[in-house]
Length: 326
Image (cartoon, rainbow, N blue to C red; front, side, top):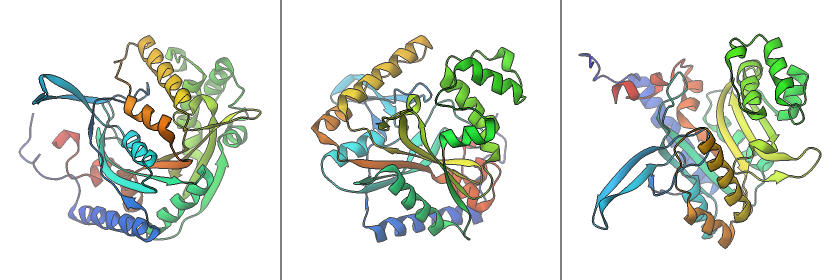
């Protein structure tokens, strides 16, 4: 039911101005760094294979597709931007709307604004330096910064090695930490238990300021390179600002054969879970085969960043019209 006042924005005029100011500062930062702003399609013939992400679907009907062509609203501009990287365009960034089905809550809206950028020649540690510089450029005042490995966080806060612990050991830790409803949880694998412990036991203890968490388990590599060692780790980082997950970065995987295998594993997992099976982005794989420069990239949530700057408790406070008023 639509209420009489539902036409009004949920964000105040001051926060609408703060959003415009934030976007201007971000563009100034990248302009000064000599990074090119690009624009890629919001709709694609392919979709994200990640089992943790669901795409919104639509269709085009018209010249060339009288019966209708399925299209998917992008969950990230990553694949298209990497096609640009493979073409030799150099360092690039994009600010765009992205879409994810089934995501709504205090920190989630199914349509949100993402900043994504790629740096040829950077590893994930050097890119963390630039992410830190960007955050400092837009925050109203300095804040503390720390960097800690994923393994060290679990060892310091939960006394376990997340790279070696099995599902049953992780379950025991969750029980000992007092996480409610454990007996009803049918979590399928160790990564699901690690995610539960991260969200319930570790994230609330990250404190204020910036906290970069890096070198994730190899099983959580997504599109990141895996550095061999004992144990092997994914060359990936996440940034938390005042305890809010804000950015996810990778030293990008450039091996098209390995990427195809990861897509195949994603699809198999989706079949097991009864999820929609999306078409794989073969143009992206062809770009990797043609040659992706050694690069690192990161995606950063603009809405969450604005929440942190403004001290907002809910994402609707920084959006003109969230899902319930769209």
